[in-house]
Image 1 (cartoon, rainbow, N blue to C red):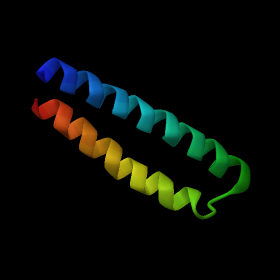
Image 2 (image 1 turned 60 degrees about the horizontal axis):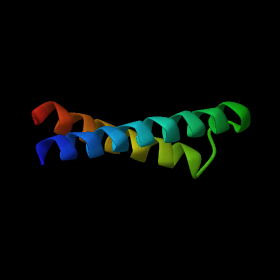
Image 3 (image 1 turned 30 degrees about the horizontal axis):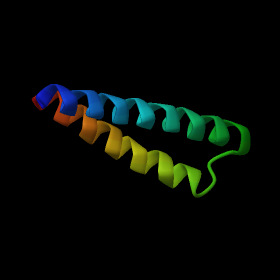
Image 4 (image 1 turned 180 degrees about the horizontal axis):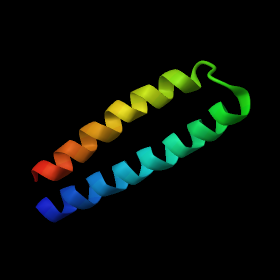
Length: 57
C-alpha cells in the first residue's frame, strides 16, 4: 500500500511540474497576468507540499 501511495504522489508531483511549466510559458509570452501568476504561486505551494510528504514516507 505504501508503494501505491508513493507512486500516486510521484504522479501528482509530475503533474504539478508539467502545469508549472505551462504557466511559465504563458507568463513569458504575455507577462505577469492573472490568473496565471496566482495559479503558479498556488501550484508552487502544492508542489512543495507533495515533495515534503514524499520525503517523509
